Structure formats: structure tokens, C-alpha cells
Length: 123
Image (cartoon, rainbow, N blue to C red):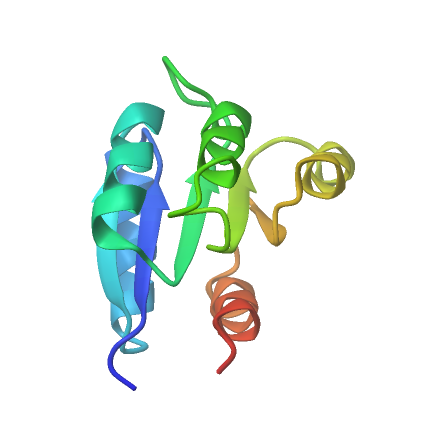
């Protein structure tokens, strides 16, 4: 089947790096983007199995990125999971409203992230 690929889009390089290290240790291939525009470009180029998307980013926020990915035939079926320090209630509402696959709150629990990723990628 091959290695599953995850795109992490977060404007905080440390968050993206640490999350990437955690997921790489589980056998996933990791691609990172540091802003929304780069995230959309990377999603089209890399065709990841899952996108972990920060909500608050300069330029294009995560909600806008998700909407852009959902309207493209190339990326509309990729599951997207938000990651944010926003209140869980607010995130849960946006997930339902925008059709995201789920969310992780910052600071995140590594085991929680891994189990959610496994569920979404179907492992």
C-alpha cells in the first residue's frame, strides 16, 4: 500500500516540526507548509492522505484554506483535521459547518493526535 502522507500546515515552525517528528515516528511521510497559500499549493502537489491544518495563520486562515481545498476536484476528498488553541466548542462547530474531519486542540496530547490520525487515514 505504501507509506501514508500527511501535510501539516502551521505558521509556527516548532509546532509543525514537533508534530511531524511524532507522526514520522509512527511511519508516516510528513510534508509541512508554513502558511495557508503554501498549504493549498502543497496539497495539490503532494496529494496527502490527510491534512492537519492550523486555524489562525497570517494571510489565509485555516477556514479559508479548507474552503479552497474543498472546491477543487483534486483535493476535495482529502480529510482535513484542524489544530488550534481556540476553544474546543468553537472548533467543533466549525468542523461541522465546514466539513472538516475533526480537530486537535493546542497544546495537543501526542497519543490523542496519533489515534485521531489513525482513525482518519483508516489504519
